[in-house]
Length: 353
Ligand code: RUB
Figure 1 (cartoon, rainbow, N blue to C red):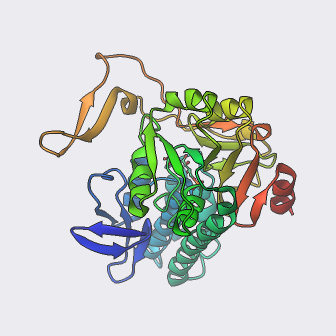
Figure 2 (figure 1 turned 60 degrees about the horizontal axis):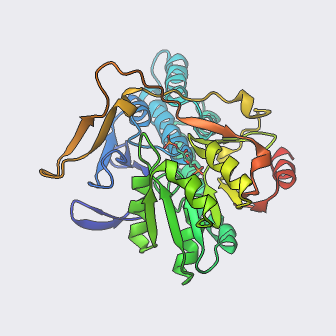
């Protein structure tokens, strides 16, 4: 993706391996959209921290970060006593850094295949995993653009762009691909409390000049009821064998309202987001994040333009912060995958064979 870092225009993925310095680097998503900076992870423990604190976020991007983190640990412990127990501990810590997105486990397991063979190959494997994801993002864009028509109003939730999918994006990819071909439409961007990933969506759409308007999450029902939304596209953090979709908290509400008003509702994701081991959404562990994320609102000061946070509630107010919800398969119109726009039956056939 095109970015300006420290005043210089550059083209970077969301996360990568810096081969000379032997470190994992990533775009720090907690500083965006106000500041674009690179965060360096010197050890796998820094990768664990970057995932937990959401410096890197979005299901496929955290999968790639975890793959790089494990490859980094393999290189750190290679040839040392207790190699296997150290590597297993690194795997476990990376795996538990965020529980809902299955991409994380898929990334770790991909690198695990090589962990007793070659430290050098482990890096190559992590790179392959990451580049496969970004190529799938490109494909999702090509596949999904057939849904985007001139003058449409499209609603999206959370952030599903290049930052979330190493490059290109999932749900945003069809929007950018259509826009580049001259199709003109408008996007409603859910703010997505409490982490406000809508800021990242807005930032990414601005790079391409895509018409968009940010709304509070609670405005979406009103917009759908008054005919202002033609299509809903969003991402996924885990898709189960029966087609249920875990995604950012608030997705389920949108799906119910979209169904009520017969508005097409699609989830876009790469192969790494499909969980062959989970029967249904009931098997998914929903991450509960720190209530502080609700209690405290982060942004930049309107005066100093420095990063700051304000307390939004009285001391000791009880807040509850589940990060994801599950949308049952019957509420989805279809799934935008690198293999085409699939119905529930086609999805099951594709991924279960
Ligand atoms: C991310 C989130 C995104 C999906 C997008 O949550 O819910 O919608 O990860 O994934 P968080 P994909 O910001 O808490 O990481 O790109 O596979 O559709």
